[in-house]
Image 1: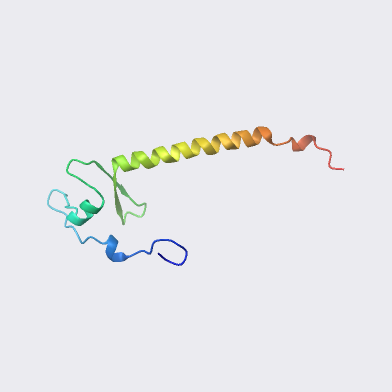
Image 2 (image 1 turned 135 degrees about the vertical axis):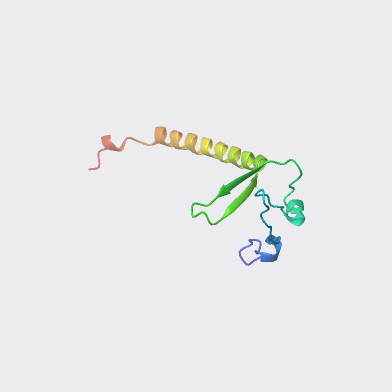
Length: 98
């Protein structure tokens, strides 16, 4: 842990090697990466590119569903709190500021 209690980033812990694109456009995800990220035969992966077209990202679809669900729940809570705050706020236009 670092001084601010965040885990320290280690390049070696996140670098798994290289992959070569085959004739059919396929790559092999290194075994250590599959093991560490619990990627198994038959898992569906979402592949996204960055706007600059320089990077690809892989996500397990189940993990994306989970994080989207968490965001949706959080968004609903924030929207409800905002709506309650708007109803509870006094009407400033009718206040006498003398």
